[in-house]
Length: 307
Image 1 (spheres, helix red, strand yellow):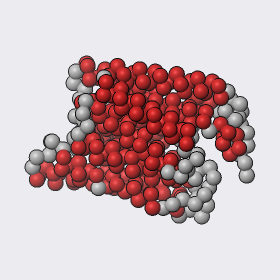
Image 2: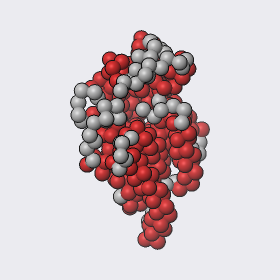
Image 3: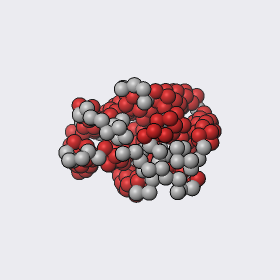
Image 4: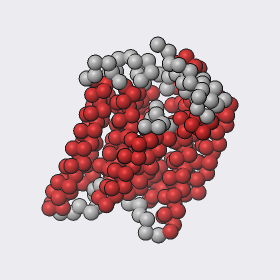
């Protein structure tokens, strides 16, 4: 059954739907985690300003990617998702193209202010965003490109923090890329309701092992007792992460009628739990902030769909 056309919402809600703003907390948590893993701090005014520019730039680049995603998918949405803002006539395709391009330019400007290395990472991220939006409906391996987007966001934030990419940041970025590949593998079937390959979902288990590698490379952990204490402190968070991911996957693999949308929404919010795992070795004090971002994402999903 084709979805019913819905043009009852105004331009303001159309903009929120286009931007999929319920996922913004995951962008902010990605930036904070990579910043902390790279050794960034907030002690002086200059790094604080750089972090604010990073958050502004990453937010604008994310919104640009989401807007342009709908612009590129206009033909597909008119056939399969007529409730989306463009086919429902809530906003014109031309306006979406214009807003998406403007957000991308402003996001790049924010990052360029930080420095040359960050600007190069941002340019690479923009290229991959456009690559994904242009081809994701035509190729089966598009989840790899989406994973690369989040991986590059991690690297961008780390470079903005310290100008370099250290081992903990690289390990966490690769793990995040794997997480997003597993998530996107399911998201591709959300509309068409096709069969989901289960093997990429094993990538969602990567974060269960990564913390032990991060403890090994964390400069703060220099004694066996400290390492053991770090692992014990981490176990509750590992349990919460595993429980949430497992719960989300049940809606796809164990439900009588698969509910891919609930799985994808849950895993998108769960990205904040992933970040909490990655960041809590060097900075356990930020745990409450990550949990706040997690619940904020769930709250926003009640009003704005995550996909």
